[in-house]
Length: 123
Image 1 (cartoon, one colour):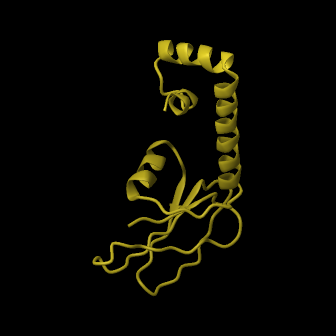
Image 2: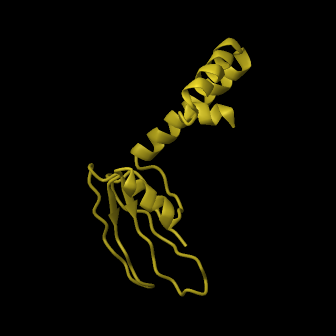
């Protein structure tokens, strides 16, 4: 957990310094930290390239908005279709579908074309 907290800059300054000393003096931990950085970069590249289809919670979408992510949202009812437009300025394309409440499941379709870098739907 310290590795992830360090990488995400969630540690206090003192803890971060202590952890950094260890990670950069320990070959095993240094390799793990490098692997985490490569994983983060690869996921970022996938998202920015529009190659990610994801399911999410409404809370995650709200958190993205609060962090300044530009979210374009299209809502549909069961059986409806919508032509999505996503431009280079869009960070996230969200298409929550309203299904009967008893199912607790919502589904979405991936947008056509390039533009928004990710898709989310939530239950």
